[in-house]
Image 1 (tube, one colour):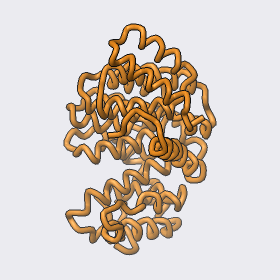
Image 2 (cartoon, rainbow, N blue to C red; image 1 turned 90 degrees about the horizontal axis):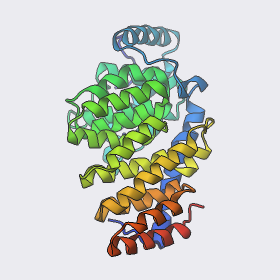
Image 3 (cartoon, helix red, strand yellow; image 1 turned 180 degrees about the horizontal axis):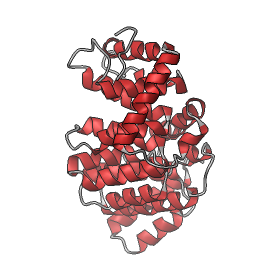
Image 4 (cartoon, helix red, strand yellow; image 1 turned 90 degrees about the vertical axis):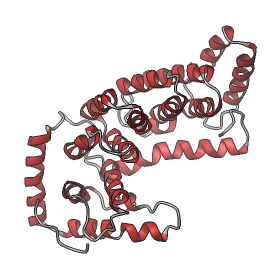
Length: 326
């Protein structure tokens, strides 16, 4: 790679004020990255024509990066400066994550190739070893927020690498999901199918941003897991996949009704099957998805339920009737 220049990121199922606040945050979190991508990404990025191969994509990308740097190195310097200062930014955030990825994404499409160069080269220089994985995840997150299909040539191999830790697996799954399209769908489903349980939960946790039917169906299958942790992760991801407000920001809503129905069916089933945090996650996600079919699904589930589950379903129906997402 060409040398870099410049200087060197248990709720109950009942309602109430806290629940309404959670819902507002969940709805806005689903919609905000989509609004940011409208500024940052080229129109073609939402549906890439084909998945780049690892070898050819890497070669072509390296050449494209070299040309871009030779033409104007300004964006490379800016991205490198933010990434190089990420460790200090996180330290100054006092226990919270600094908004490193969003700062990079706000630079717009010109940041894409500099981010990919840093990822391919192992990150910016001068970052303390203990902070290097965190800064790398910042760069991965930024690549997802920029929603450029060229990033799949770099992110795909990271997603497929079984040696990546769970935090990195979740971050890269979310980044690939945000880029979206058929190639991203293929990468996500392939990685999930090959993953051991801990990595599978991490991948599922990031998949909800890929609002495609096959991905939602895969999440629905995971929501039926007997593992509470997997069911909880899948329920939260289904809430993102079916997020009613997020769908309103998308230019192509062809699959919206089907995806929200699939999500609602899986979430009602998970609500019945699980208790505790998994049930609470399913309840919260149902409010965000707010599929029209949900009241009928709850009524159907109630017919075959035990008395205790019927009472829980009645509470869910009351919460849905007062849903502040509407």
